[in-house]
Length: 123
Image 1 (tube, one colour):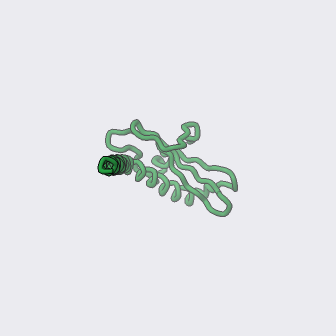
Image 2 (image 1 turned 90 degrees about the horizontal axis):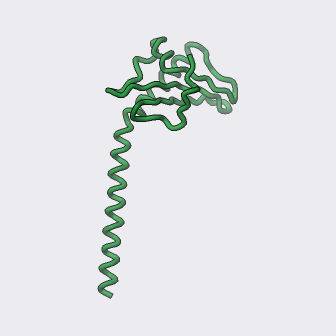
Image 3 (image 1 turned 60 degrees about the vertical axis):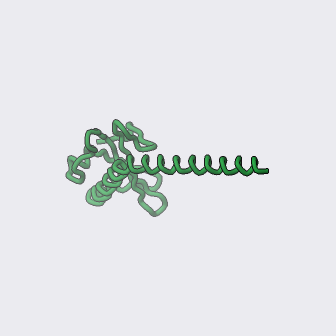
């Protein structure tokens, strides 16, 4: 009985250690990608202003893509680089029912947005 109690305690310690490690690694990954998520948000905000100014709104089911280079050239965005990590990207606008949805996609040496498709980069 005492031996069983020791095994249960040891398994409990192992489970707590594994959960702790996973939590720490999760926070480290999140802090590492935060600068890239902030850049994606910056690209979305630039696209919103650009689409409003140019009336670039898609019809239902369509997509409008604008490259980061275009947004930079039009002065809606300063740059798309993070420290020593050169990035490229684009923003997408789509009409989903009656709501316009915006999404940014970036590709850097150390990070790529899930769903990035370089062939969508236009102008």
